[in-house]
Length: 244
Image (cartoon, rainbow, N blue to C red; front, side, top):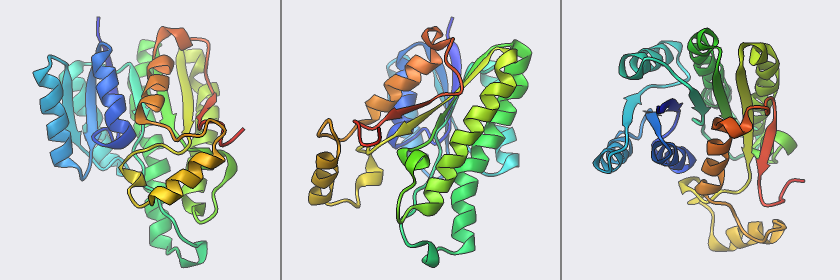
């Protein structure tokens, strides 16, 4: 029997790879997107042509009304949910003194508020089922803090605190909550980096390489499976040793 997953921000980057790998591993996947409509439609077309079960839904997951519609659509399509991957997020680089309050709110709403809103809706179903898994995508900067990425670091650190607290709260209901803290991962978010800058990052990494989206999606598959049933409230770093 296929399990049902929602992946927020699932049409591009790490989220896209997570969506693909879940679909290939016997999940029915509802891919959330906000602005990347063409990429979401292309992803659905490619996967459905191969016989995989995937739906897409536009929602700004920082908005409560949109999140409610996303989960209503999930219930209409699939009737339930087994796995929520809170992946949607935006990055920002720059001095904190140059950051506007509006930009701060945007980062917090997209990266952290969305995790709260989506988890809250998913738990309405999971608690009734007495089962379910929530996986939150944080960042190594949420663990250590990143210069010129203070707001981003704060939002990702918030995800870690949220994960730990929620794991304790819903563990008695049979629900696992974990976080993944990626390091430098080669996605389109890295397009602004020069080859020299990427090589510098490789040299700072003990494994002497940067990560791939597959490195993160493989962790999602593990944490979403029965093999991780005794793991909850954990933050798993996938950073090549950049942060130890």
